[in-house]
Amino acid sequence: MNVYIKTVIVVFATALYLTALRLLVYSEQPYYILGIGVVGLTAWFLGMVSGLVMALLLIPITSVVYGDYVIARDFMKLASSPAYISMQVFAAVGMGFLRQEKRLNTVKEAQLEEANNQLQAVLARVRELGGVHSLCGTCKKIMDDQGEWQKVDEFLKKNTKMEFSHCICPDCAEDFKKQAGKL
Image 1: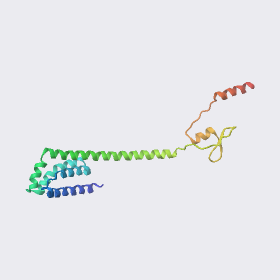
Image 2: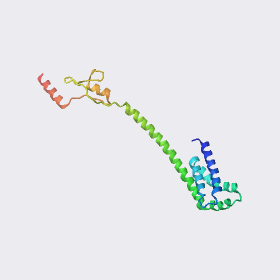
Image 3: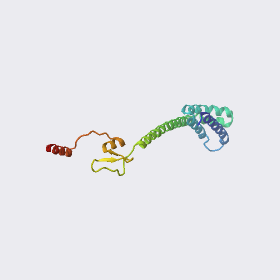
Image 4: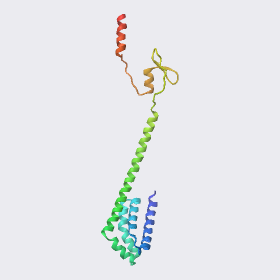
């Protein structure tokens, strides 16, 4: 949301608070909670510092708007109390921290989404060998998907990440010795 729109919302909420304060002053309802809500809303939309500034400005704004009305005297007693000021500061700091955490989580989620997309792209490129492949019983060549016969090691090197080094297994070495002995 745009900063200007957030500022308009905060100004509107402050005006609504001052109007509600005027209407609710004679009721038994805890109307002062609305001021803490305005401070919290300001801190959420505009940051912790703005919320703290709103906490400091709300008392003078109310006394200027209402002047010598009964609300100003009653409200000033309440608004200047340490308990009320600490509630406003707590609301501003708490909502500011929540806003900061939300921003950090949004960044982390975007990074996680990007990493997930990269992993999915890599996974899509990985080719898994499966199914039935024709293998010559004599020379051990294998038929590929195009119907061409290849050596098994060439086929696996082409279709997997396998690398080969040639050597002779013990059984073949024994056969080789026997054949060499006949010569």
